[in-house]
Length: 264
Image 1 (cartoon, rainbow, N blue to C red):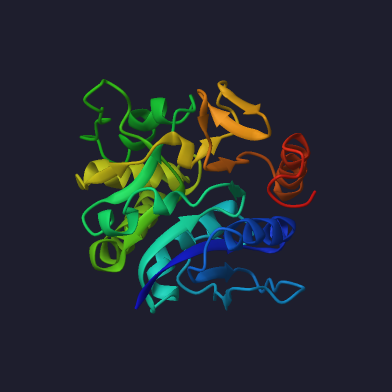
Image 2 (spheres, rainbow, N blue to C red):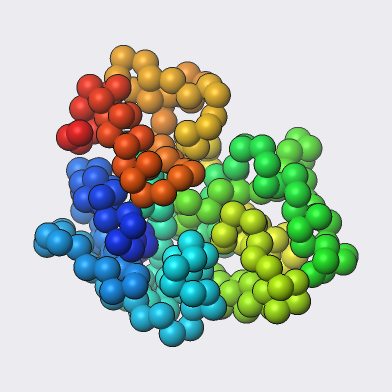
C-alpha cells in the first residue's frame, strides 16, 4: 500500500482533467488516480491510473453534482492499494508541491488535513441547516473565534484513521436526506464539516495558500506568480460554475501568468 493523489471526473469536467494532470505531473512522481463517473472515459491516454466507478452505493442520481461529491467519501473503497490519499478537486490548479512542505501524509494518521474556508455564505448557516436534523447541533469555533469550517476541495486522509469514518459520514448524509427531505448546501462540504463537529474529530489546518478560492479579495498575480496576502499560492481553486466556465477561468489565469504553469 502507498500514498497517492486522487481526483474525481465526469464528462462535464473532461476539459479540466488534462490541465489538472499536467500540473500535477510536472511536480511529482507520486501515483495519481482518476475516478471516472457515469461511464466517462478520457479521449487520450493519460499518465495516471484511470478507474471506472460504478453507480451502486451512491445515494444520489448521476445527474446531480452531489453524486460526484459523495464519491469523496468512498475513495478508500475504490482504491484498495492506497494507504493515504491526497484528494484534489479537478478544478484546482496545483502550482507547488505543497505536500512536500510539511509531512501532511503522516499527519493524516491522526487528523484529517484541510484548509479553512474563508468564503462567506455557507458556514454561517450551519446551525440553521443541521438543527432540523440534529436539534443539539452547535457550530464550533476555533481558539481565535473563527469558524471551525473547512473547504473539502483538498484534503489528506489515511485509510487506517479515516476509511471507517468516511463510511459513517456517508450514512449520516443518507440519514439527513431521509429526515429532512432535502440535500445539504454546497454538496459534500457542509455535511463533512457537520460530521467533523458532531463526532469531534481532529483536524489539522493547512495554510489557505494550499487551497486558495478564487473569491478571496487579497488574491493577486505578482511577477507571474499567484499570491494571497503577499504569499505564494500553492493551489488555486476555480470554484463555482460549470465545467466550461471553470475551464475559461483556468485558461484566463494561465494567460495572466504568461503561461508559466502549462499551456493555454
